[in-house]
Length: 292
Ligand code: NAD
Image (cartoon, rainbow, N blue to C red; front, side, top):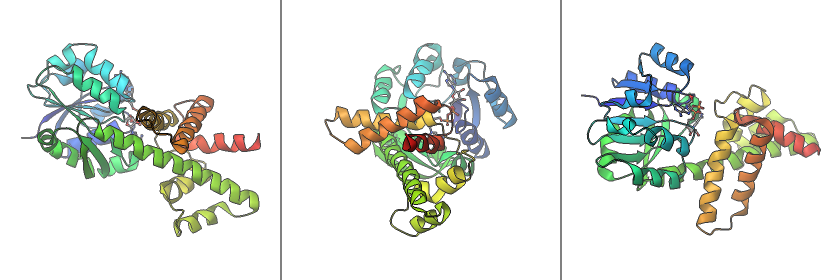
């Protein structure tokens, strides 16, 4: 029989992930602070709980898909009923993009008998809808084996990265590369445009050349040049992820200038434009800076 799942955080990613779990035959009871999100969950065929503690009662797997690790800790630990009523041996499957330091702190505060696996995702809303996410996991091998069927319902690739926290470290590192790639693609197009090159033609050349990256392949044409800015991933979340990577780098004593500067630019953009706008709007922030 399929494990019973509590799913906390029914946002841009959480809702399509829940849909894949329901389709795979899991029973999902969800909770989100937003009433609109709880209504979406019910229309997707899930059960909505009035509190996090109600959602986790009897759950064998507790999935968190919240903005960051501080919020995850407060939702799971501030009210002792949230974890006390889970099934014995339940696994907390922490799928948010959290800082690995926060994840290890959470591990240290879990009630005895509960297990923790960090399993952040990449691929965005589109691949969440398709059940084609990439998931990077950290945890004990036996615990990873236990949650594999749950992850397979949402992902095509699952990478085991190491102990608890390793998945979250890998995710922050990925988003450093991804976020630096967005800035590089936006600045490249601005540079070419100023010289007289055509932006759409430039993207075609980059995609057939060694300058290709995820921003040139998908984000530039779909969300930036089109002016839709509708990737479904908020600017503040990207800024948080790259700051997580930069903090990790600093804590490990590495002097990585590109990473530090990338984190600073994303953070300045989130301050200037607001954390909740789409992250691809960083193009507007960079365009303003170029004119200054
Ligand atoms: P989102 O803001 O759309 O969803 C977060 C949800 O959490 C919201 O519905 C919000 O109401 C809810 N929430 C916030 N605080 C809460 C609390 N205390 N109790 C209950 N619910 C609460 O964000 P998202 O885009 O779905 O991202 C979720 C996580 O996944 C983030 O860590 C993000 O960095 C990561 N992520 C996002 C994407 C993407 O493309 N959007 C891709 C990969 C990873």
